[in-house]
Image (cartoon, rainbow, N blue to C red; front, side, top):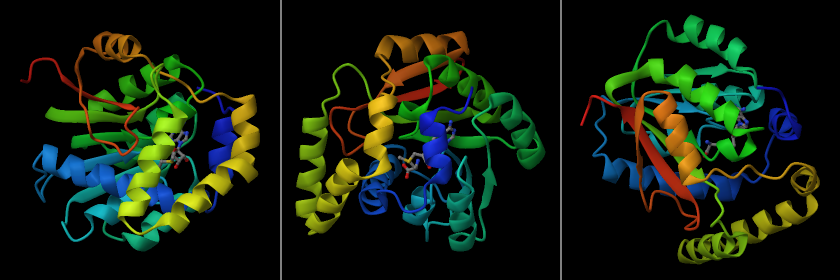
Length: 240
Ligand SMILES: C[S@@+](CC[C@H](N)C(=O)[O-])C[C@H]1O[C@@H](n2cnc3c(N)ncnc32)[C@H](O)[C@@H]1O
C-alpha cells in the first residue's frame, strides 16, 4: 500500500470535520453495542481510529480498546483521553504495519476489529485485501471484523447529507452540519477529493476479499448514519 493524496491528507489532519465525525461515530457505536450485545470484557481493535471517537463513545463501559491510525496527532489525543487503552501509530504500508502490530500486539486477539469509515481513503481494493490479510490473525475464532460506512455504486452524497442533516436537527446540532458542509466546500478536503476520488467497494468485491482470506461475509443494514453506505461483518468460516 502506498501513501496517496488521501494518506498524506489524513497524516496531516488536526481538527478536520470533528463535530460531525464524532456524531456519526457515536451513532455507529450505539447501533454496534445493541446489535452485538457488547460485553464490558469484549476486546476491540479500532483500526483507523482517528482521534478516538469509538473509545470516547464506549467510555464508562470499561471495554478494552486498542486503536491504530496513520495520524500521530490523533493517536496522541487517544492516549491523552484514554490512558487505559493501547494506541499505536501505523503507516500506509502494510509490510511496515505487520511489524508494528507484531511488536505492539504480540499475539493478542480481539472480539471485534473495526474498520469504520476508512476504506474509502485506500488507494485500491488490493489495499483492503492486504489489510484484511493482516488483521484476520488478530481476530478471535468467534470474533467479528466490521467494515462499516462503505461507499459503493449506490452511495449518494445528497442522500447521505440529508440523513446527516436530519440527525443534526434531531440532536439540536445544526451548527455541526453547517460546519461540515463549509469544511467540505472550503478546505483541502475538496481539493484532494477532486484529484483522488473516494474509493467505492461493491458488495461483490468485499465478498471476494473475505473469501480470498477464508472469511465469511455478511452484509448488515443500519449500523451507520449515512443510509446509502454499506456495512459488512467478516468472521472466521468455521464459527456460526
Ligand atoms: C473519517 S476518519 C474516521 C475515524 C474513525 N474511524 C471514526 O469513524 O471515528 C478516517 C480515518 O482513517 C484514517 N486512515 C486513512 N487512511 C488510512 C490507512 N491507510 N490506514 C489506517 N488508517 C487510515 C485517517 O487517519 C482517519 O483517522
